[in-house]
Amino acid sequence: MLLREALGDPLLCRYSVVILDEAHERTVHTDVLFGIVKAAQGKRKELHKMPLKVIVMSATMDVDLFSQYFNRAPVLYLEGRQHSIQIFYTKEPQNDYLHASLVSVFQIHQEAPPSHSVLVFLTGQEEIEAMSRTCREIAKHLPPGSTQMSVFPLYASLPHLQQLRVFQLGQKDCRKVILSTNIAETSVTIPGIKYVVDTGMVKAKRYNPESGLEVLAVQHVSKAQAWQRAGRAGRQQSGICYRLYTEEEFEKFLNMTVPEIQRCNLASVMLQLLALRIPNILTFDFISKPSPDAVRAAIEQLDLLGAVERKDNHIILTPLGKKMAAFPLEPRFSKTLLLSPEFHCTEEILTIVSLLSVDSVLYNLHAKRDEVYSVRKKFISSEGDHMTLLNIYHAFKNVGGHKEWCRENFVNSRNMTMVAEVRRQLRDLCAKFGVRLESSRSDTGNIRRCLAYTLFLNAAELQPDGSYATLDSRQPVAIHPSSVLFHCKPSYVLYNELLHTSKCYMRDLCVVDAEWLYEAAPEYFGRKLKGIKS
Image (cartoon, rainbow, N blue to C red; front, top):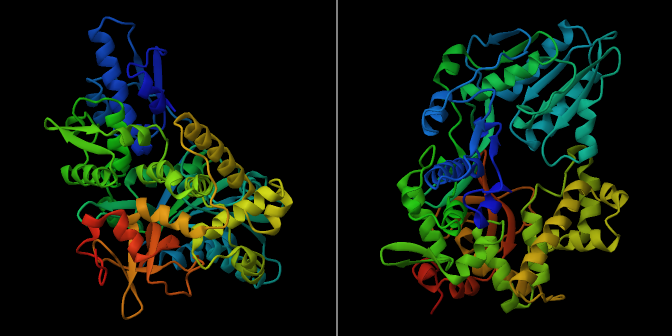
């Protein structure tokens, strides 16, 4: 929100104090914000305006880095109130951290009083749901007289009411076990936690500017993250953290998490900086500088989207780029919206972009997978996940956003309500910029063609052996099992993101024609598409 405000007021004149909290989390937005706030502070001093005070706060951060960046700012240490925590490491490296965490949970369960809850850190929904099933199954077959066990999953796309169950006090004589992603690392206190089981793994984005691929992959946590996780055991009482890695392995972890700005696609960042009228985006004062290759790749991507041009050795926004920067979206989605009137499908594109801008609106319960498939079947489109999501949203609106309908169809009502709110805001922006609000009615071809014109960098082609490869870098990829196209073999698809687990999976897919891709970027695809004549 502060970044959006800085677009119209780079000196942040409305404020005398800015507090940047949870600074260690280092998202792309916070890193850009550090630079904007520092520049505003310097400029206001130079112009003899009211000084801007900046307070940077965190429980675990690289204090020296932040102090030096903010002109050797003084550091204040406040004594924490954390209870004592014992740390235990494994004697040997663990090849299977999921099995090791399962063994740890049941060792604790057998030995510790039932009033003490256990928090286990895993990497994602699939792992959490699988382990939840396994824990419940094993708990049923424990010896007579054993303590009962209640297992609670916790991840971002879980419906809100199910997330809240985690914070309820456990039943007497029943162990509470919480299986969570890294969303439980900071900012929340779950009552009753005495034991933390840290797998040492997390799912994070990695971007390769050479291949242009941004992949969500499982990797080791940093030492700072490991200490944050351990701290969850000492919030209300003394606790114990079991680390499922050796002390030698821990010493090899990075001290701090690599900032997102050094491992993600920078197209959005570069577009924001150009909109903020930064004189030279290549020399912007980042607290942690991204690689020159990543900056170049981002500018090339914006150039392909028609958002930037070079003028007198400077990179400036085109008229289209200025409009794109006004939308709080990834550049490709901003352009999709602005281009949609040409394909008479703005209303549908508004919905699809909103659906892709929030956490998943669907949740899949493995224990009820047949029931989930049965109720979802009526929404499934052979044209891909985008069209399927569009069908689900239309059905949601037709029933007036009824929560009972969401529950029956395994739809996250909170996230769907957020989609409606995002869509409303984007629709207002479209009206402000004179974007014609038309509907394609039942013509889904026009919707998919519009998507092809802006998401062409995320295209993959079916290979003779039945596998897929991305069109630009020829990276082998596969359709994710959660996609409605999992059992299909369309010739060309667009994908929203890549997830790397056992292999590189494409998520959120849309079937497209090769000709559409070629029309969208003839120069770019001239040498990449086979068998297409210009």
